[in-house]
Image (cartoon, rainbow, N blue to C red):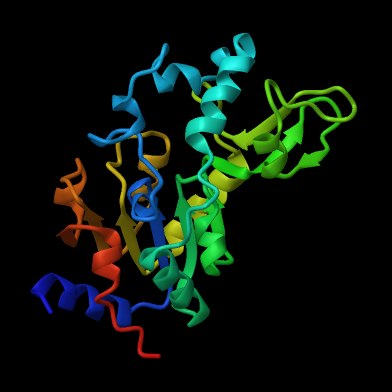
Length: 242
């Protein structure tokens, strides 16, 4: 066991209010592409950049093209939880972890068994009619063609936060609360480049701030422990004392 993993283990053992804050790197090990890596969506070729397609303006102006891209690239329904998701669910079940705050929209934390999951950017698993508010399962998006429509005639919108849209304030406030009350904050699989989400770590008051990422982040110097590597591989070395 490396010195870093040993320190991480000691921190987890000494904590009882752990919060995990995660980004795309948590899900890439489940086969879901991220946006900014070399293999990510930003580096693939489309008529428009993904950031443009996934904007509120584009969704409103070109819904056909939005949904074509969305079905093709944003729905990875065959993905399964990986080691990171499973370890976090076990820590919660043991009463050591109070919440997962995630930028991901894939629902894999819940699939692994996590109960308190604060989804900053929404979820592809939830979809609502813009006209009557009726809920629609993700399968309806997959099985439809063109712009998905409700029986009332309204357009069905995925419950995901598009560019130009604000975050859900109640989820943001609850994320601030759990992070400010945490005795350990583990940040994994995120470059901490997207605001306002990245600014949440400023609310952490403790001295067990851990950053686990494959590449350096702008907050590395603020952390009490930095581990360079895959979040799943790091968590696989944690002893959960089962």
